[in-house]
Image (cartoon, rainbow, N blue to C red; front, side, top):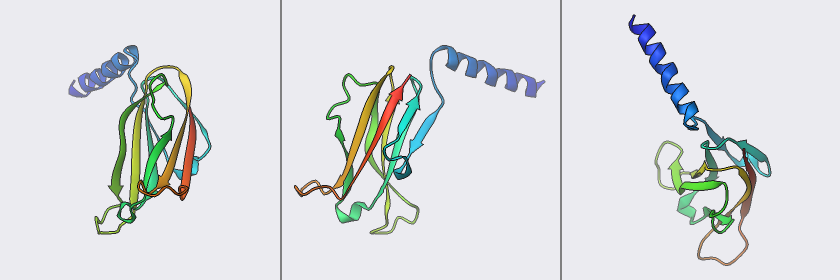
Length: 133
């Protein structure tokens, strides 16, 4: 009887989430998705993870669009830095950007890997086209 109630409760929660337009999906991208077109549904979470090493002064930053106002995405959090496990000084990690798909539309996200205080060209770039349906 407990298994049946638990199973029914889980199904009920999933149906409610579906009816309210909520999504349980996270789409995670990395360098291998450079230049791709990604399809999301409204309320999906987009997470972009780009390798880097914060101890060198280089960081990944979103440069386009300058603002996400009027685009289908909303910023959840940008620029977190996750180490790869050992938490040693100088250890490489991932810069993480998270966005929520809020409404249908298309946006091209462009990131640069640069030192904020240096005016030179970035050492790397990353772009992805996001289509929210």
